[in-house]
Image 1: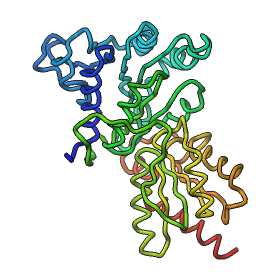
Image 2 (image 1 turned 90 degrees about the vertical axis):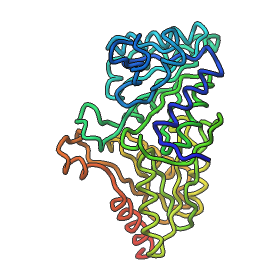
Image 3 (image 1 turned 30 degrees about the vertical axis):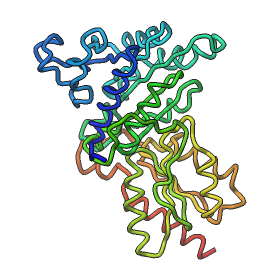
Image 4 (image 1 turned 30 degrees about the horizontal axis):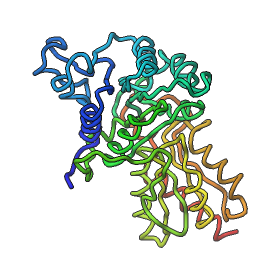
Length: 340
């Protein structure tokens, strides 16, 4: 099995699905990105992060569409294309820019299938970059998947590694519901084993990244790697963590999370999103409501402070939840149990 970057896994998933199904199109700002114009096939570099490199050369201008810088227009066009039989994949360069097209997502894409009694399908994907750590400033570094998880009618995928990125994107493209697909910009170069062939990672199925018996650590996206690092360090102290990667926040694999919490009796939820109403709070409430009798210590949450993402490098590093902060929360949970 070949080692591929997160970026390459996304690119490969798009190519495979476009070859398999000619209804799949890609649209967005600079998705072709020809430096001499989109017609310049050899120099079509696939956007500023190279995620769609090579698509324009292989599939042409009718299936890889560079759009004007107007998210409201091309995300609205994505909805219309899906309703008329295509399977569009839109790229919003940064999740922060979805504020411009929030009405199209919230009031149209999320509701059309419901409001038409299932007669209208919206098989579309909106891909977007998110997350801090790239020195991109407060308007390009947010984790906004909790906002979209809140909206019924949308599926939300947040892969943490190249293997899941490819498999989840293929599942998303083949799904008949709208899927918002979040790609953390700080792990685009991360490599892992990825099969060459097409495969699906089911939406709504969590991954038990590391089995353990003492503490359940549920982490989202890039935070999975912080949790893994913390778990490795804590193992040397005799604390056995079970690390769960939900993979999707909607649908959320509540069964896997609750089964683990009932086994370990402790929960630490790790989320890079702002602390108010994020996924950590949602997962904490789930455990409190459904597994309270199994809890041996209060649930702890690890999130950034409730401030915009700083631009200054030292402050941004301090802002992001890291392995040390996760380990500290786990130790506090275990200590509370042993002292009570």
